[in-house]
Image (cartoon, rainbow, N blue to C red; front, side, top):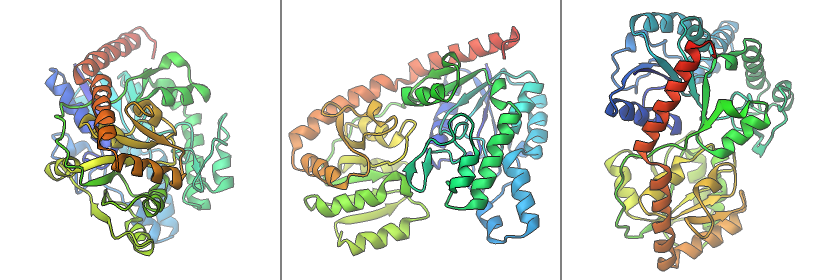
Length: 413
């Protein structure tokens, strides 16, 4: 089977790209051919289809100059990219795929490519890595709080409440984008949506999607051996953003029994969080930045436990799955899809989102109890391996592709 994978980026930078790169490898290991459609980027991996990629666009640089020309450029590229349509049409004509599998495509490739695929009669599957199709802000957040005011397609609430970055301009563009895609009936051309958790499917059904159009397939895992942990520190591995609960984590560390804690990852607020840690007197906290491959494995090997402190609706959470697969217990916020990954007292511990005192108590509990860590870690690994079996995932995905292709041939997409 020839599978076209479409994603804004083609390098490891977040959960969606982690999935994309693992998926490409899995498909090729199972005798499928793959091609990539993406945006040119300095950090991209080498790719035979790069000549069809769209031009790199740095919105943060464009937004530094508030000129009318830049505003027009942002609107043209971020909502409905004609360049993406033109380049994709050329790729599809040259490399006729059997099915297209979309990842995150908003703002760069844009859902305009769905129209191109439909015109070329290419059946489409779309993995749901966020809630952008339901919420212009993407994460159901408004000024740091959970918000579902756009339910029923009332996207104007995004601009009214300035949900995106607290900015009227950014929120207005996100609102316009949502209305254009609704008017273009983008989702009608999708054969099947893939939800990585039951929580994601539940949200899409609540917002009007037919249940049979959303298939739950939790992300798979490559084979990962358990780590022989030396239990030298607690661990956070993720992007440093407000909705990831990093401030709550730091406040919890100030309350928890003193012990070393390592923060892995980077983000625009890293300097702010480092300053906050100093102000809280957290000399035991080490910010290590982004780690990859061998360095990341070495970091996991020293971890006693991991924390996922998110204060948004996580769709899945590699930040929970990856330590669990190594036999490391996880403390997670009881929100979104996280309770599907972490069962309290069985495969880890849960705490109310944003409750730094409860998080501090959970961290102290695990740090001081090696037997509990081993018990939870063993069960967590079993759960991660069972729910993330790559062979089963490849089988289920192949069947899903076949159904979408068959439905398309019969006029069902």
